[in-house]
Structures are given as structure tokens and as C-alpha cells.
Image 1 (tube, protein in one colour):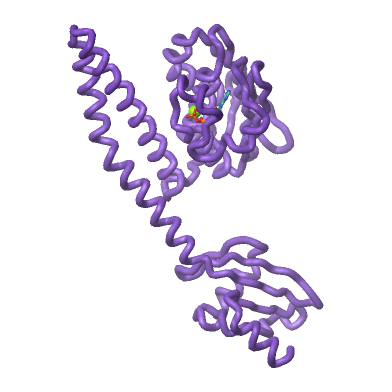
Image 2 (cartoon, rainbow, N blue to C red; image 1 turned 90 degrees about the vertical axis):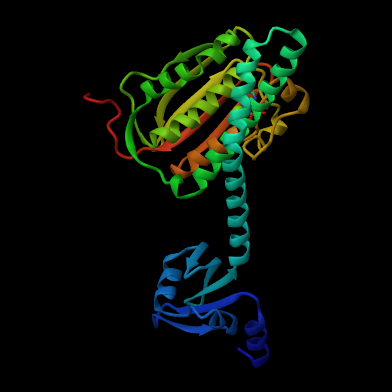
Length: 318
Ligand SMILES: Nc1ncnc2c1ncn2[C@@H]1O[C@H](COP(=O)(O)OP(=O)(O)O)[C@@H](O)[C@H]1O
Ligand SMILES: [Mg+2]
């Protein structure tokens, strides 16, 4: 390498490390990487075990790109510690604020509820009803923000257990019974009894509750919601389908984003936080799975959740 190129690489904001595969040792590091003060055996071992991706080492965060040339592995490292620190501060802030809002909002909601049921004056009742409705919405928002914060923290770890899917779907239906009755939507559990899935029961409950709730909310009166399951390519697939209003194609890639809600007019009459599907996606991802959606406007939607099979017997005792 010419002196000029050496100087340029030394002054680059990227850390550079070159590992010679035949010699089995590091043959080059640039100044930037050495200045980080982490160039030591365990760091190199971590790096060699990583393909492209992110690496955390002694409080530093790096984005790592690697490629091979002339029998050498070249690593380019970007120090993303400031970005990570900022993201963490942002998450902590949202989590703290949500936590602080939780109690006062519940108090407002429950006091408004009591007053509403005791009030006879129609004008006051209307005002109280508005306070009640709005505070319930805030409660739901804070609840969703707290769920997301928990998923992103240590509590977000998956606690694996064998879960009976039929029973879990039954519980979700039970939980949403009144919402469904209010809209005259019928709920069908097509998951065979004793179907086992290795997953985090509490998190899968939250996931299914969000999907079934959407399937009811964005349905037509007298519509249907059904849940079925099957295995495919190493995954347990859980499908939540509805006969609802559907989602226009151009919105499909966006609905899993935080706070995204499909067009204002229909969202105004059907309340929501826009956080449900980002919770669903997050839960699927931490299980090593994913979510897919198919939808036809005016006909209905179908959400498929993929959870990797972990060698469970499909049926208990069979
Ligand atoms: N089953 C469904 N049928 C039609 N639209 C849906 C369905 N599920 C989600 N959507 C659309 O995706 C948006 C995002 O969903 P979600 O994240 O759960 O937020 P929210 O339900 O609070 O609006 C919803 O506002 C709705 O427009
Ligand atoms: Mg929702």
C-alpha cells in the first residue's frame, strides 16, 4: 500500500482490519481502529465470528461490513455508538413518560366513568361521555407504548413454553367477546384442539389479540373472523382472516410502521393507536418469525404469523 493510501485509510472515520486467512492472523489495522482502544484478541475473535451486521464490544457499537479478497478478510467498521445512545435515550424517555401517565389517566377514566353512570342531566352526561371516551383512548395509547417499551427492554426476552394454540385463541376470543358482539361479528376458532406451539404464551396472546381486534374493528356488521393454523417450511403458521373492509394495496407495506393508520376518514370513526401491528411484527420477529398480509379491498384481509417450529409434537399425546 502506498504511503498516500495508508494516510487516507488511517484518516478514514471507518475502522479497517485485515485478517490473513492462510497466516491466521491480523495483518493490518488502520489508525482509527487502533484509536478505539479495543484491538485485542477477544475483539478480533468476535469479529471473525460475525458476518455482516452489528457488533457490541465493551460499550461500543459497530456496524460491520466484511468482504474477502486475495485470501484476506477485510473488515470495515462504523462506530454507531452515538446513534445507539440516542436511540436508547429516546426509548427510555418514551417508556418513562408512558409510565408516569399511566396512573393519572386511569384515575381520570375511572372517575369519569363513575360520574357518567350517576349523572342524570343529559348535557353533563354528554360531556362526561366525551371525557370518558377520550381518556379510554389515552389509556389504550399508554398501554400500547408500555407494551412496545417492554418488548424492547430485557422483558422482551422470549420465554419459550409449549402452548396449546386452540386454548389461546379461545382466550383471545373470550377477551374480545363484547367488542365482537357490539359489531355482530362472529368469531370462529378453526385451530384443532391440542395443537401445540413453542412460543412465549403472554406475547403470543398480545399478538393474537391485536390481530383479532383489528379483524373485528375493520369488519362489516354481521361479518366473520376466523383463525386457522398449519405448518409450512419449518414454521407454524397462524392465520387470522376477516370479511372486512380490506386494505388498499399501496398501504400494505406501511401498516406495520408505528402510528401508521390507513386513511384519515375511516380511521376517525374507528379509533385506534396505530401501534397494534408494530407490536405484532415485533413479537413475531423476536420469536425468529415474521408476519405477512394479504388483503382485498371490500372483501377482507388475512394476516399470517410464522413461528419457527422447535421440534414440538404437533398434538399433545398423539
Ligand atoms: N384486519 C384489517 N382490516 C382492514 N384494515 C386493517 C386490518 N388490520 C389493520 N388494518 C389497518 O392497518 C392500520 C394499522 O393497524 P394497527 O397498527 O393495529 O393500528 P390501529 O388498529 O390502532 O389503527 C389500521 O389503522 C387499519 O387501517
Ligand atoms: Mg389495531
